[in-house]
Image (cartoon, rainbow, N blue to C red; front, side, top):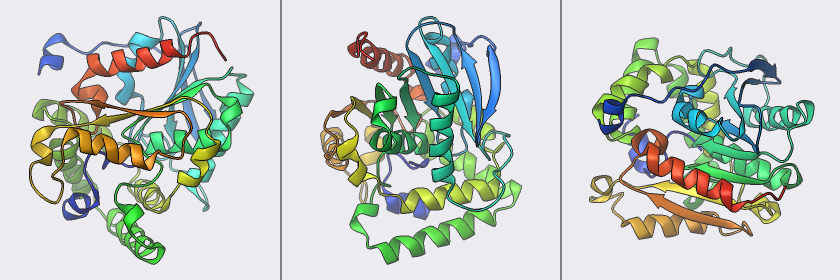
Length: 311
């Protein structure tokens, strides 16, 4: 999914502490960095169940800094960056960026002979992970989608013509941003939707601006048009959806809803998946791993442990 996450579609279109006090946990430098298709790939760790980390819109390995540091002790971790994000050159040519990312993930698993990895995707990366599970379930052990859904929240209530028009408008508007406007939007997003702590917002917003503006606009438009719910019936692997919830964000209309109601909404979007479950982490916003690193890590490691030694 995109960076919208815990908000619904209307707030998106209307407006385009403790963690810091302990200091960030740093992952070791990657053992290897390579390019596979449209992906840049960092590998961390040398043993254990493999995990592939997929960031969301404008993200990079910085999204998973603490996750990598924790997982690399007992897992081989592949932190990928999509072309056009976090300083990786934008993809050349036309065609669907989502299609190319899917093909590249398949190439990564095949070329590096990764044995049944778990895909962990944030936002748009979670959407790609769910798509992959529907198309290639035999290649993976499971999926953790962090506020990434098979369809953009709210779009399931719109007709295709309306969705196409909205996606085209967003692509044009985003693609026309100047670097200064892009940076201002990134900061506003992180302050109001991305994270709760203003210091975290100020720290991480500049990292989003390392991405290519026009590529970000293309990914965003594709995300708004995608509907992978029909694929979920084939996604016969364990799937965990992590739903962030920050009560003050859901007090007033049009986003007013309880934590239980938001969880139920996410469950409805994943209803076609045979082995899907949803867990809420609060208080947190879209970047759950930044707002609640300890809760997020416990949830992730609990899911990995639940898979046991089965491939």
